[in-house]
Length: 75
Image 1 (spheres, rainbow, N blue to C red):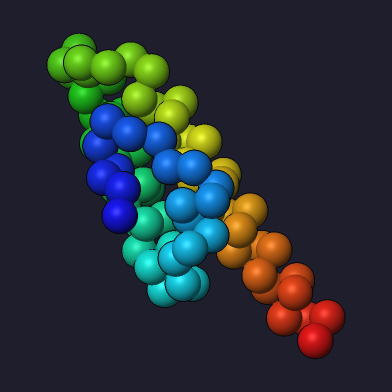
Image 2: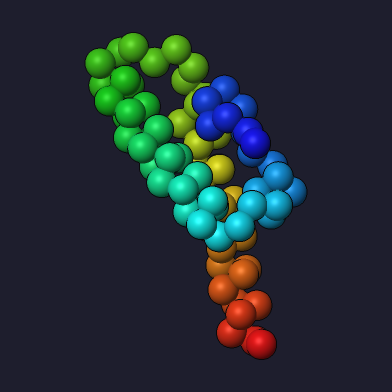
């Protein structure tokens, strides 16, 4: 499994996870984003590109969850 810190998850890696694991990853991304915002305010951000990467991870996870929800509706 991928580490939330310092790496960007690919959609193919995320598609291999079940819905519960995706929701856990989403919650972890939100927590990391929250912490990064505080680090930005205090001036202690090491990687200034990380917030953008986390936001993209959030979008990927939400997209996959939505795709699965739509697929369930069609069944």
